[in-house]
Amino acid sequence: MQVRIVIAGQERQMFHPLLREGVEVKVRLGRTVREVLEDDLHIPEHIIEQEIQSLFLNNHPVDDLGTRVQTQGSVLSLSAAMPGLVGACMRRGGVYAGLRQGISWAEEEGPDQTDTGFIQVKLFNFMAPRIGPLLLSAGVRVEGRRLAQVLDNLSESEKARIKSLQIEGEKQDIQSSKPAALISEQESVMLQVSS
Image 1 (cartoon, one colour):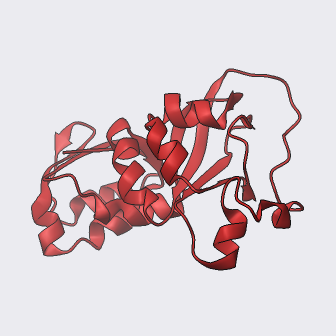
Image 2 (tube, rainbow, N blue to C red):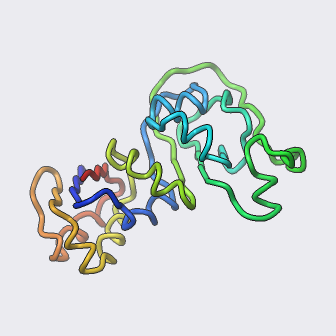
C-alpha cells in the first residue's frame, strides 16, 4: 500500500515516534555504513561527520564508517551526542570508546553482495528532525498499525497542517477515521511525506 502525505511547513514532528521506533529504507547491501548514509539515505557529509556522534549497527556501537552493512533487516541507529559517561563511551571514535570494546561491532563474515534490501533505521534525539525529513521525503516502509496510531493521535492543529493525504492514489479526508482504519489493516505501508 502506498501512502503519500503533503504537509505545510518543514516540521514533521508528528512522525518522530515512527522514526524513533524505526522505519525501513531500501539500500544496497554489502556497502559501507558511510556509503549507505551518503548514497542511499542522502545524508550530507557535514551531518555525518559533525552531528552523528553515536552509531549502532544491530545494537553494537560502530566507530569505523567503513564497516559493511551486509544483511537485510540490519538495524542502523543514529544519535547525536548523548549525555553523561554512557554518552561519552558510546561516542563514535571518542576517548572512552575503549571502555566498550566487548560490545563494539565486529565485522560480519559473508560474501560481498550488492543486492538491494531493506534495513531498519532508528533516529534518536536531534537526528529525527535533522535526518527524518530526508528519509520521509524519499519514502520509508512502516507497519500499517504504527502509521495508523500516529494518524489517530494527531492533534487538531497537526491535522490542519496536512494539505493532502492519498492512499493508493486516492485522496482521503484526514478528519475521518477511514484512512487510519484502511492503513491499520496493512502489514506494511510505503510512506512518503513531503512539504
